[in-house]
Length: 413
Ligand SMILES: Cc1cc2nc3c(=O)[nH]c(=O)nc-3n(C[C@H](O)[C@H](O)[C@H](O)COP(=O)(O)OP(=O)(O)OC[C@H]3O[C@@H](n4cnc5c(N)ncnc54)[C@H](O)[C@@H]3O)c2cc1C
Image 1 (tube, rainbow, N blue to C red):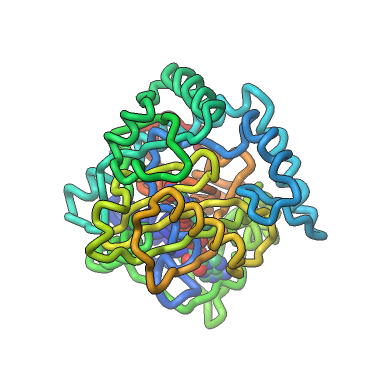
Image 2 (cartoon, rainbow, N blue to C red):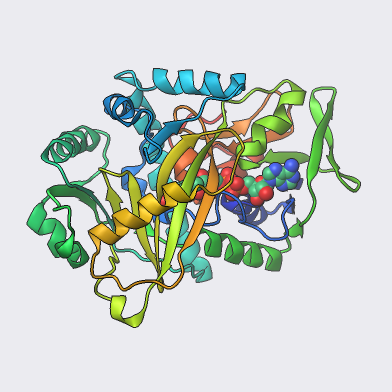
């Protein structure tokens, strides 16, 4: 079949790759000059298959109340005159109700493990390189209260088949010696040795190159203006210059997916959840001072990954509409925290600040599969986990388009 994939972020490119692997003739349409320049550009780098959880949880409610009105708060609501924003916020609040968090964790756990396996198989098959590290993820706490909450949660997750080992403070430092000098002492944490990290942008760019070699066409600098449908199916894609036609269409437009679907009467609960990252170049003297195990800092809700000779720290979630501008106050807070955790890091000459819009559903569970139009498919809404879930979602999508049932327990549409 001829398939058009809309959007060349990590999710769209992975979809194109697996569709081509399944024997389809694929064209990717993207408004930017290169793949991966939006939400997939400078994310936290974690492939957190054993830590695939939504932000919406009963535990986040008291924290949100504590953070109210603080410009540096990890989770911030900036009210706008946008009904979609208020609806999303309300649905997020409902997902914090006990029981729903567990349901959403269950939905994500299977897809995340499948996705990690797909990524490993892809790596073995193609030799793709993206500053990858397979040293696991350590989720650490710097207060006893947080540590106890993490440990009891690990117990609950074990029932879902998700393995996280509870580690004492000394064990955390043994796993990641760079934490030894932290000004805020580590109290304990959870470790998942099967988790990984790597640069999502490098991966997206490399996978696009491999896909091109396989025959996938990339139409870049090609903004989509609309999806044209009649008689229960998509007829064509209206571009700034001309039209594109295919047998089937996949929407992977990140945070912009709902905007192009709405005129078709298809409403999806995806809204931009803005996050920030900082990237520090590491000098030769930083080899020991910077961590190489990927880390999640429970107190500040930031993730830290070593990407070759760079250190990336990312986090915070801001419900602020489609404004993707960088807020230097929030980036400076991340830099301060990184420096206090690793005080022996040398003074970096430059720090790259970045902001990206996560395409988030209130549950953080992505939307993968069919729509009301018979040749229109979705692969979008991956929220805080798009890099973790990209390969599994792409492969499952290719199965669904090809009329096969994906080999993973997930509620595909
Ligand atoms: C700060 C931060 C940290 C994160 N950390 C992690 C992490 O550690 N691990 C993890 O798993 N995930 C993480 N994520 C989430 C992950 O980065 C996203 O879920 C993922 O990148 C989403 O990919 P996507 O392809 O759906 O969207 P995008 O990468 O945004 O791709 C969508 C593409 O569609 C294109 N597009 C949009 N509209 C149009 C149009 N009209 N015409 C043509 N093209 C269009 C865009 O240009 C873009 O290239 C993080 C996100 C942020 C912001």
